[in-house]
Amino acid sequence: MTDSETIQAVLAPVAAGRAAVRLKDGRADIILDVTGLAPDTRDALEREVRGAAEAVAGVEQVRIAQTTSRPRRRLIAVASGKGGVGKSTIAANLAVALAASGRKVGLVDADIYGPSQPKLMAAEGVKPEAREKTLIPVETRYGVPMLSMGQLVAPDQALAWRGPMATSALGQLVDADWGDTDTLILDLPPGTGDVQLTMVQKHKPVGAIIVSTPQDLALIDARRAIALFEKTGVPIIGIVENMAGYHCPECGAVSDPFGRGGAEAAANDLGVPLLGRVPLDIAIREQSDAGTPPAAGNGDKAATFHRIAGALGDWLDARGD
Ligand SMILES: Nc1ncnc2c1ncn2[C@@H]1O[C@H](COP(=O)(O)OP(=O)(O)OP(=O)(O)O)[C@@H](O)[C@H]1O
Image (cartoon, rainbow, N blue to C red; front, side, top):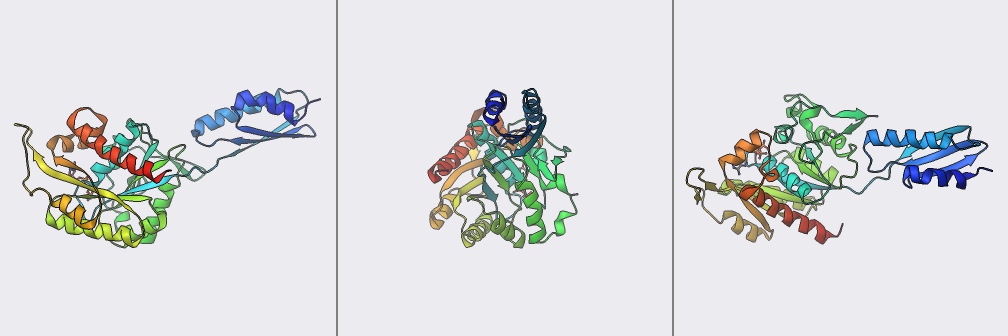
């Protein structure tokens, strides 16, 4: 006599323990836990489970419901007090370096003023698909799935958005089907206005990285960015000083046209860690423009980003989740 336990035992090897079955009056009701599986894999698994269940003697009808338990996914904001300091470049390279260290990382480009992640990650022109209104992140060749505001709206459309509109658009990106991704690097729009504030309040990153250049002015802006996160109760993981020192491609020497030590001093003053310094290096711009993030390569530049990602990884580990 076929009962729930018999059919459960038949399905166990097929569904790798993901199926829970109840059999009553010839009808098998199956709950299939598809947490962490890609959409295609989910459907393939459902087909296999259905086939196996239908083959059991005494089963006349099979009903399958897919469920997912929502994994805890944390957001790390990458922010800057003003535009053009290399925030998107740092965000992309940190995501790539963190993924290379074995973490499940995704990239969310919330920069409505100049979404540049599709270009930086060599995914320009690729539109994300949706499944029952849930977006499916675009795979990139660097092991970091990505979604960008630039994939949702035409470039000139989002510019006039106020905070609430930008925040709800960001919701679509954050609540996408990220599978088993547990850490999302969030490239925020530059600046410290209403748009950034509402995004941070609504989506509550677990921590923030502030990108700044060595110039005093940028540091004043960086202070504003730090203040924004403090106001919203989001811990500052640290500052990344970008374009710190000029790396001469001809002679290899590093000089400091904007002076040295500004970020260290500011970080000390503010009591936040300096996570690292990235030199102004034409190769970083060229590789970024070409969609090959330096962190995906070898050598000095990759090592710089891997060190900063290591500091971020330590911070995440110290949080204990
Ligand atoms: N360390 C670096 N060395 C050389 N070029 C860099 C470096 N960091 C960034 N850049 C270049 O500077 C320009 C601005 O960088 P990016 O777009 O990352 O800045 P951003 O702060 O995200 O700007 P915005 O948010 O205003 O669009 C890009 O052309 C980028 O390739």
